[in-house]
Image 1 (cartoon, protein in one colour):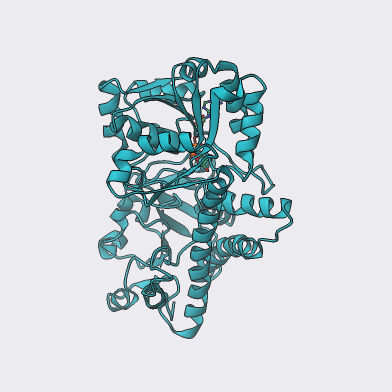
Image 2: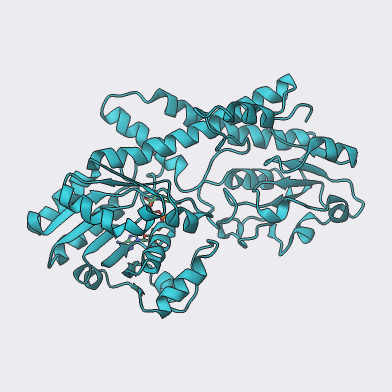
Amino acid sequence: MKICMIGTGYVGLVSGACFADLGNVVCCVDNDTQKIDMLKNNQIPIYEPGLEEIVNNNYIAGRLKFTTNLDWAIKNCDIIFICVGTPAFKNKHSADLHYVFDVAKKISQNINNFKIILTKSTVPVSTGEKIQKIISKKAKKKLFEVVSNPEFLREGEALRDFRFPDRIVVGSNNKKVAKKLKNLYDPLIKKGANFFSTSRRGAELIKYASNAFLATKISYINEIANLCEKTGVNVEDVAIGIGLDKRIGSRFLRAGPAYGGSCFPKDTKAITVTGDKFKINLSIIKSVIKSNEKRKALLTERIKKILSNKIKNKKIAFLGVTFKPNTDDMRQSSSLKMLPYLQKKGAKIYYYDPSGEKKEFTKLKNVRFCQDIASACNDVDLVIIHTEWEEFKALDFRKLSKGKKFKIYDMRNLYSPNLMKQKGFNYYSVGRYGN
Ligand SMILES: NC(=O)c1ccc[n+]([C@@H]2O[C@H](COP(=O)([O-])OP(=O)(O)OC[C@H]3O[C@@H](n4cnc5c(N)ncnc54)[C@H](O)[C@@H]3O)[C@@H](O)[C@H]2O)c1
C-alpha cells in the first residue's frame, strides 16, 4: 500500500520508517526543508535508538521517501497519516489544532482517488468531524474516509513500541475501512498486538484517557514519595507492594521529578478543556496537573535546602536534562525550570546529556554544556542526577569527586542510600527516609 506520513517528527518518522520496514512504500512529508534535507543525506534529525539503521535501510531499498511536496505526496498515496504537532496554546490549556486543519485543507485540494485519512496526531474528541467537514468543502464524500488511529509509542522505545504494540486502536464509523486497516496492521497483529476497532470519537478519547491515567499514576507515586520522606518508609517498597496487585500493576510507579515531555503535560490539560466543553468536571485530572506543577517547585526547593539556601556561586553539575532517557526531546522537561532558576540565583551550572547540547540553555550565562560526565562533575558542590540515562547508573563518585566532597541529589533513585552512606557520600534521593 502507498502510504504518506504528513509530519516527519517523532511519530511520523518512526511510524513511516517502520511501515516501510513492513514492506510498504512510504512517503514522509514535512514542511521543514532542513529536516527533509537532513533525511535525504542520511542524517536523523531526532535521537531515537535504532532509528538511523531502519531509516537508512529502507531509504536505500527505495521503500522510504522524503519530500516537502505535500500536494504530490497526497495525490500519489492511498493511505494518509496526519502526524503533525498538536501543542497547547501558549498560556492556555486547549490544543492548537491549526497544523492539523492546515493539512486537512491541503488534502481537500489534492484528492484524486479514494483516500483513507488517519489522524495519528493526538486530537480532542470530535476533531475527526471537523477534519471531515474541511475536506468535504472541496472533495466528494465518497472519495475519502477520516479515521482516528491514535499513536501510543514512547520516545526512547519508539521502535519496539511500533513493532510490538500492546494495542492498535482504530476509530472508524466505516466497517469496510476498518477491515482494510486491519490488513495494514496485520504483520503486527500476527505478532500478538491487540487490534481494537471502535468509533472515531471513541479512539480520540482513548488516547487522552490513556495519557491522563499514566500521568495520574506518576503524580500519585510522587505524592506518596513525599509522605514516605516524612514517615520513614522507602517509596520503592511501597511501589513494589502496591504494584504486585494485578489491578494496579507495577509500571509508572517510579517516584521522581514532575512528568514532562511532549505529551502528558499538554494532553492532561487538553482533556480537561474537552471535559469543560461538555460540562464535565474532570477534577482528578485537574488536580494531577496542579500536583505536577507543584512538584517542579518542590524539587527545586529541595535543591536549595541541600545547598543550605546558599546558591550564589555554587557549582552544580546536572547529569541529564531531557525529560526521560533515550530521547533528545526537551519539551516540558523539569530541567527547563530548574536550571534557569538556579542560574538566576547565581549558581554556575555544568550539564551533560548523552543526547548533546541543548539550544534552550545556550543563551544562559554561567550554564555550560560539558562533553562528558567527568568534566561536568569536576570541582562542583552538587551533582544532580536529573534523567536516568543508562550511563549514569554505575558512576564512580569517588573518582569523579577527585577528593572534593560534593553532594549528590539523585532524583531518579539510581543508587542505594545505605551503600552511599557507607561509602561516605552526602547523598539525597526521592521518597526515602532520612534524606
Ligand atoms: N512524541 C511522542 O512521543 C508522541 C507519542 C504519541 C503521540 N504523539 C502525538 O503525535 C503528534 C505529533 O507529535 P511529534 O512529537 O511527532 O511532533 P513533532 O513536533 O516532532 O513533529 C511534527 C512535525 O510536523 C511537521 N509539520 C507541521 N505542519 C506541517 C505541514 N503543514 N506539512 C508538513 N509537515 C508539517 C513539523 O515540521 C514537524 O516536523 C502530536 O499530536 C503528539 O501529541 C506524540
